Image (cartoon, chains in turn brown, yellow, purple):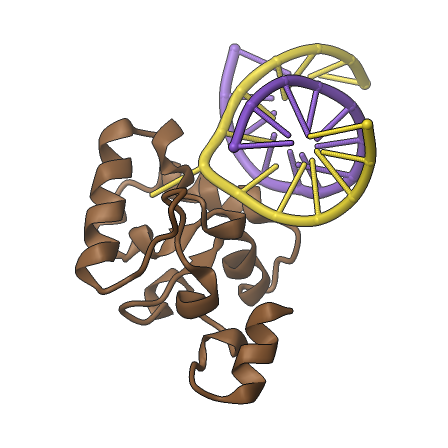
Length: 108
DNA sequence: CCACTGACGAGTG
DNA sequence: GCACTCGCCAGTG
């Protein structure tokens, strides 16, 4: 599922779990990522915590910087608090910008 | 079996 | 925003 996240878009741990058919198991996603021996083969930086938080810091302070750097390079916007602007970049229904429906969905 | 631990999430004060 | 609590569940000792 993580490999399917488009460039410039992000998904929360919960989103990934849900799309993988395991709703409510966000923790498992993080756990698997942390244990995966070959994480370099997938866009792990596009996976963020609920609300757009970059929770990778706990795993590795260095990884936290790498994640933000890669996301910014893909054109992802951040809020003042250093969180991803999910309204614009979240992978899903609310990610289709420009339409009224999308704006409404983004607010909801 | 029990206790503890997470790259988590939602709710409350 | 911060500090907690509770729910979650596979893995570990």
